[in-house]
Image 1 (cartoon, one colour):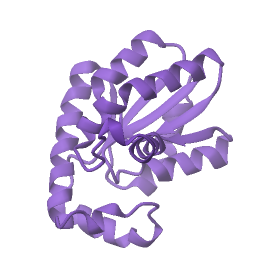
Image 2 (tube, rainbow, N blue to C red; image 1 turned 180 degrees about the vertical axis):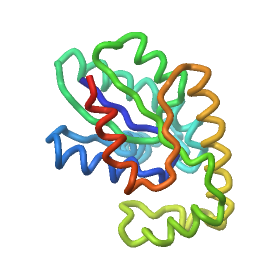
Image 3 (cartoon, one colour; image 1 turned 135 degrees about the horizontal axis):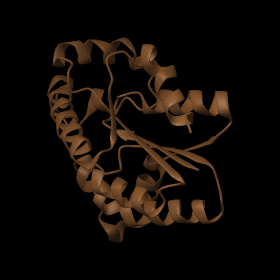
Length: 185
């Protein structure tokens, strides 16, 4: 079985994946590793890691697809987390591998910019990759405003495509609920 946790950056995907590993001993893989492998390993691809997640996702799709197909053919169980799953791609995966894949999107469409920024600063020191605190001269507030708008877009796409979307209001309170949704048969 392949479990995919995707959605908006800084919505709690890594935190959930660490708990999945600890509780269920399921191997975890981040799509960021594929992105950075291709960026650092093949400059001819001209992968712009600072482009929108939607753009980078389109570039990574054939590589992620090949990895997932191989994992399923080998009857592996993996928990994959990362922002690199556009909704059309997720629908394709579910259609092709319906009994072997589960996808959940996370976002935060209903939070104010101020509340999200406050939360991010609260947990800044425990983040694996606090990139948004030093991102190409953009303010944290402008990045968060953009990610809230992206959450709304992804929510709408998930509704249209009948994909699971969970709006994160407090990841620490929602953690067990999200994990049990993944593990439910």
